[in-house]
Image 1 (cartoon, rainbow, N blue to C red):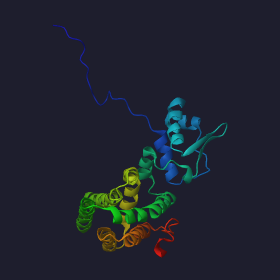
Image 2 (cartoon, rainbow, N blue to C red; image 1 turned 30 degrees about the vertical axis):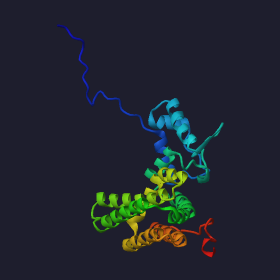
Image 3 (cartoon, rainbow, N blue to C red; image 1 turned 90 degrees about the vertical axis):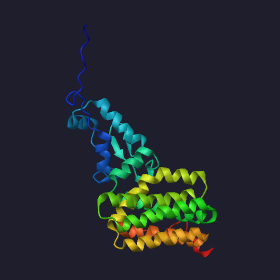
Image 4 (tube, rainbow, N blue to C red; image 1 turned 180 degrees about the vertical axis):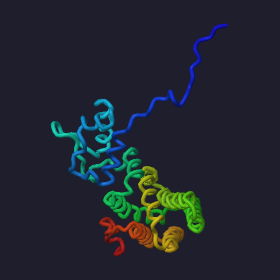
Length: 259
């Protein structure tokens, strides 16, 4: 009985993935090689450097345009836009920030400033609305945070420590019982993880950070909104200190302590 040719699958037969121009450029942009106002390499130069056709280069550049990271200027090329014009909540942009933004203090500062303006209010709202189930979620994340802090002797345990830290903040967002805040915590998770993991790696006093998180948890549990606001600010100030950044003042919360 005759059969047709048998298809042989081999790693040698698998098509080689072409280089991603978008990934190449965003890594250089976030590392500071190209700053806002700078032009990135021309299409033809990218074609020659990576040995790919012009349509592929344009397709990848379109990803950066869609993310608000570069703008195409007819007859001149592609220019990096100001950070304030980036689509910071776009999932692709958030993913790039998480993977490539570590060397860029400007991006870190922008994310930290946003968190300083938002999370104290989230904590304050959580202190008013948290249910018993919410408090359990916050406490479980805190317990995991403490456990992995004490046992963080390898990369995997440090990763778990950071995961618990992010889960702690997510639980507070959800405790507001506001669908927008809850969804926003999910969207911001990669950016928050980036700051958390880096600050945990460089923290001079991890026990102090753990105590700041405990005070935030307790202020929510005891339903003390003003204390929750201040405790959230203290946590983020610790993050700024660990990253070597100025935490700055929260423009939205500058008067909260006087209410």
